[in-house]
Length: 255
Ligand code: SAH
Image (cartoon, rainbow, N blue to C red):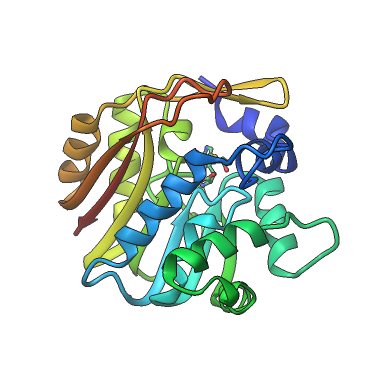
């Protein structure tokens, strides 16, 4: 199990972004894994009731793709992650600092899905304005943002985080309860998680992953006080040698 200390010590956000978040690689091959997840996120954030004032992104890492459709429906966004360098990398993009990752191709793709590819710059600005705080969190704590107490949000999104952060099912279930407490009753939890993955690797480093099945995730959601409203499994596109995931589960649940 790759614990939080390993993330803090050796997770390199720039290499992570280069490996997993370019829309196409140097050979021009499209990142079908990412594109599939972007389509799933658009579909989920288009569901009735997925709107409100505040959205919390749990385990944001250095990425913004998970907020691109979401930011159209919420006024304020709070992003949380355990790792200092990931929060810093995200802030680089938010503040348009030199050396920030270029999300433009990804933003253009989402804008195209939403109907107008030309709106990419507008969406980037909208998202930059809406992300109000980038805070430390540990999903294995009863209050993940300790010592800060956040008012409950209208929605939580979490992509590819809990399977990386939890060493076993018991931890996974309790982490879901803890992050579930960050949402208001009637609010939503939007999750994208890989199924049957045991590791992912980049930059010559291997990170462990809790091997999840769809039923286990759905049962844990219900155990945390959520009703599953939407659940879709899509096979992992072939050709990815950097992880052993078999499928991706996209899930929306209501508290
Ligand atoms: N959401 C991003 C990043 C996923 S990588 C994406 O979709 O690509 C997994 C993330 O989980 C990393 O950013 C890592 O810092 C974070 N993480 C690992 N352990 C954690 C913990 N105990 N609490 C909160 N975040 C954790």
